[in-house]
Length: 195
Image (cartoon, rainbow, N blue to C red; front, side):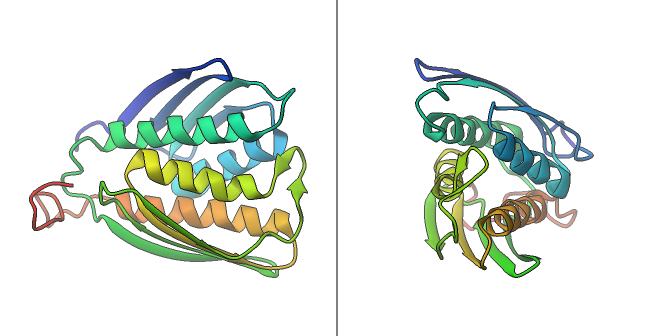
């Protein structure tokens, strides 16, 4: 199997970000975004997707969490695209439903090269720690747009911490499934011949 890794940097007036990703990792992570709860979610994403992930972000948190969360998602999406290269042999489609106590999240993904995002549900509290709850949805949208994913997500529950954490775990498990190599396939999973 080819090496499915990427290292991507993104520097703007709002954020300075370095991301490394190994699709075929062990779930090891080193995360520092300046937002404790977001770090926890990215660590969970790495652990449950078995992705080796480092994220270093210096963002304008004196304003709010928006640019940090959005730009990390953009950079991670670019890293996913780079690591998967021509997407030869991947399973492409996956879906996962993940519970966390009273909450449940569903994630359906197609690594299609055609970004599309749908979200069903609302978060029960406006913020968790230093992260605005709706930024979890925006993270998924920005990841979808920059990794070329068709992504349908939903959450339900009574506790936003649980809802968001279930969402990140579901996203991790679905992406892990969809990026796995199908040994029966030597080409890409598309009648078009490319993704």
